[in-house]
Image (cartoon, rainbow over all chains, first blue to last red; front, side, top):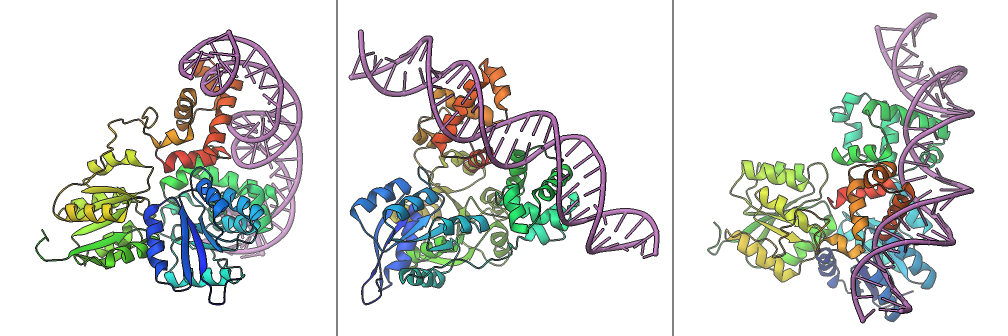
Length: 213
Length: 213
DNA sequence: CACACAATACAAAGCAGTTGGTATTTTTTG
DNA sequence: CAAAAAATACCAACTGCTTTGTATTGTGTG
């Protein structure tokens, strides 16, 4: 690829101008990176690719109009040579899997440090894949014994499941992931809902968001 | 306050390190601005304020643990002299009123340009308020023609349905309430989901909450 | 007056999750 | 050790919503 002397040409796709500007500043002093263009959403990005051919795209997942994953799919089918690093706000395991499945070359959280970013961009530019380690989601809410969740007396397993539910895993996905029967997952879920006194998935979603679990 | 020769000391509170780094780069060449510290969430920010006394805080609204508005409330009650500019994603104009009500000194969308940002920081630093011109007098997202919802081109009826969906009406309940066939409601809902590019009720719930519809 | 769009209505197949059970096995704990 | 609690597993009926269609009836605009 573009290793020998050549600059790595990059398109950034994100709907936050300030974030893009920040990235730009961050990268503009890098001798081997050239920011070719920017796009505010997936649609704009795909339009750009008609006339531009970057080596690498930094692609935000959460964009309006056409989201990151849909854009990724299109990019990889029409321009398979272009490397794509997905950017995401949150550490959601299944999103990483989805990115991998969609053919992304890398995945970064928006709270990475500069070095990590550059490192990732370079390795991906050289044809490597770059995905985060499977970190056991260390959400203080879940293992903090003083957590407000404590009052509901959820068991360990139930708390664990809640983390996956929070990340939009379906029952089937959780079953697969944890090597459980889907029936078991349903039972756990049933108990969780009972203990939290919730009636349906939407209420659970609201609960999770309201208390920032 | 700190106008005469003194630098404007600033704390940035945002959970995206990359964004912060960008801001930092953006601001570090400004002779009259000094970035004192950063915080990844509201909790951290409030901790910092025990030992630090900035002139100005750039405060992201969407943060984990303690969100921007809650942090704003605490800051303004404990340290009323500290100026606060709220940062928000571009499509949350309707939260401006909330920021004003909470005592913020300014409000910026994350897609502002550098000049605008600096301008705002300086005027707020000098004691002025700085809110976007486009102040929506409309308290309803749904009939505001400038609403961010406009981009999705929902029809009148679809917007109406969305209000009920927001209130957890089931399709059947909406049908009853509006004297429609449940099939009609399903059709509308289908079209809404398509236009918003959402896949299931949970995603819709998150969408509604995220953009505070 | 056409034409596009909005609003209405219908139907069958299917998916995800709930409800209300039952029933083992494993682990914890008094 | 014995009892309680947790984790596992199963099942069938049910609800709510989605998907993928089709189709008719207004309604406003060039």
